[in-house]
Image (cartoon, rainbow, N blue to C red; front, side, top):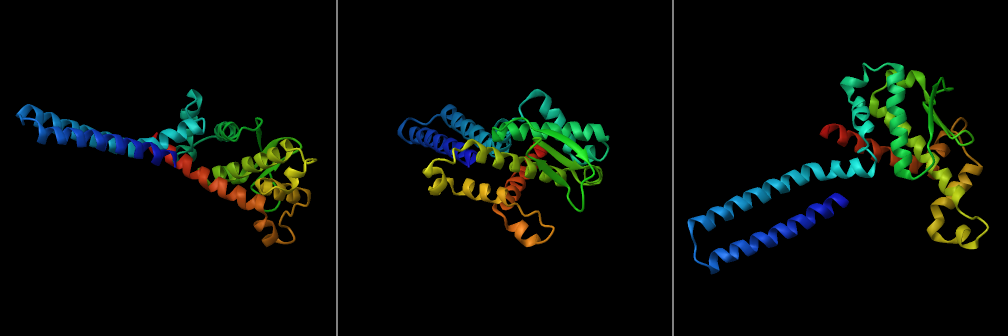
Length: 232
């Protein structure tokens, strides 16, 4: 949305500027020089508009997600498919920890530690609230595509954010427990107190608001990282 606003403002300003130039062509004596200058300016503005369409979205992603940090750009580029497959376990962990750091900064939550381990059943990622640690299944990380792993990492980062939101609110206030503005947090708190892990009823687990919210955030985040990789 921010990208569209910026590009839209440029289009309005550029169109107004070109309209004034074109009006001058009809109201003032026409010369080869003035016509030549008009065509050059029009061409340059058109080129600049194309550049903005191509770079503004990824540029905003860079700054909004913290990808502008010097160490991040080179590290995040490891997520490219041709690089990811050749990374060692340690290199993958370092790359993913950088992703976790970026997400924590973007979500304005406390730093989270990433650890790899063998998780039970079909679980590929898990956030521990008590430890403030994200666990990633070591086999899943070793054999999966980078974007699948990023989806899991961002999903768990979102759970950390949900816990942070619930913790920061004063639940002794009636407005927090009843006002529609806090509806999401109210539901998150309720579900955390009676979390369904899917072992007995997968549909109930899948439809919990904390899970639907985390899936939506992860999907959006994967798009951001893919867009970044396309530019860098």
